[in-house]
Amino acid sequence: MGDEGGSGKGSGIEAEVFVGREGLENLLREYRGFYGRAKFQNGFQSVGWIGAWYRTLGRRFRPVVVVVREDGVWKMVWPFFEVQFPMMGRALWPAGADVNDLFDPVMDGEEKEWVVCGLKELLRGWQFVWLPLLSEDFVKLLGEGEVSGMRFCLRRRAVRLMVDLVGVGDFERYRREIIPGEMRSLVERRGRKMKREGGRVEAWRNTVSRRELLRVVDRIIEVGKKTWQTEAKKGPFRDAENREFYRLALVDGVEEGVSRLSGMWIRDELVSFEVGFLHNSFYSMHTTGFLQDFWDYSPGTLLMFSNLRWCFEEGLLFYDFLQNDQGYKRAFATREENLYDLVVMRAGIWSVGFEFFLRFSGFVQRWWKGKRDRRGMGKGRNFAEEERR
Image 1: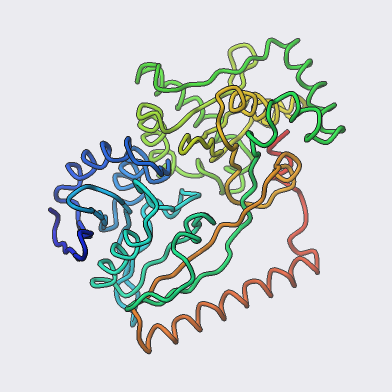
Image 2 (image 1 turned 45 degrees about the vertical axis):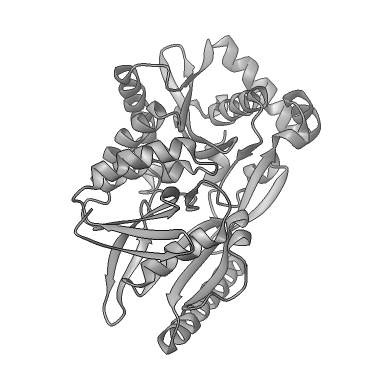
């Protein structure tokens, strides 16, 4: 299937690479069935999300998908796209690299051999593979030992903050004992104010019609266009191409049961929204926004509190803030992990030089960031804090 492909075999485990758009839709249909039964899912790698990306933001790129089977049964799927570098050859970037917060593959178990088999097959056709924003659990699964024929360059990318819902126990204990007193009082005051104005929370799962979902997503996008992120040319709704992607991806994700949308209304006006993923008993918060005219109501924080309560009631394991070490996340989080970037290269002299370049550039970036922070160049209006109000 595809324009070209290949497979690597060994001890009942085989990897097959599908390249190009020919047959991609058929592959994604088969992938949908696998995703539904996989033990380790990732909403950012779900069929609706990846399929929408290949059709919109990724339409200019050549799709590459590796499927690993054991005894003929699907065990792992990882979607990518091809990039070309002068003097460096062909490489692979993960599909959705510009919109995703987590790149762990979808797997039906925890077997390092599946990952190694898939990566080795990819390196037969490409010089290196970039794997950003990998979870601690996946990095531990891959391990630190060397793998024949491959060279790894791993570095910490970002802090991942979460609320351990099981560890806390219930929402009332979380509200009383975890949330700082000043913040708790503020939320309660703003909650009463919102209630007096007729404020209400609504959430959308795969129980509503597609027509209703399109209506809701269009309202979310309209709010997103008016947030500070969009005004600063940042955020998910910053341009028409991104908005096209999100319109498809959010509707498909909700229909698949992977995404959950929620919003805070004042009478008939949507004033804030939150987009989350449901996978592996996690709720992962991808993006949020609010209308700045309703600043004094703290609609973002009130909506997040409502979603936290829902997560406790549903018996989920974690409310996951994903990447970015922001102040409001630290105030609400009870657990801290790391996310990692990994570059996997063909072993050889070239990879030694390339690894040195990667590590040196990482050192320069950290040095410059520290210097900028010491001089106060990065200070100013704290948009991240304002977003949660």
